Image (tube, rainbow, N blue to C red):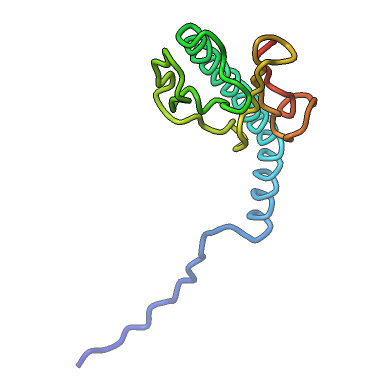
Length: 145
């Protein structure tokens, strides 16, 4: 028969982190996120401003091509849609944009007015807040500046 030997039992210590250590790590990570997040979101806001400026410049080129072909800019009523769909005008040789006119980076339509108060046409986005004026991400993006 087998005889059971009495071996001294060794206490195995479990290795791991205590609750206090985990809380300290979480606090440190939270502090780092609080310092980094505002800088990251600031970059996102400025990139949306840059995207709106680039889109307005693209639309400006298409508007100029429309004017060269038709002899005038689209009216306020025709809007930017006249760059994609023929408003049944002589000499319209569009479409002048490869795709439909997208909304501004904040999801709202661009504002177009012709004749404009600042030139032959005014094309602008009201920025993140959707209201005239503002600073930073809330600043309007204007075709005449």
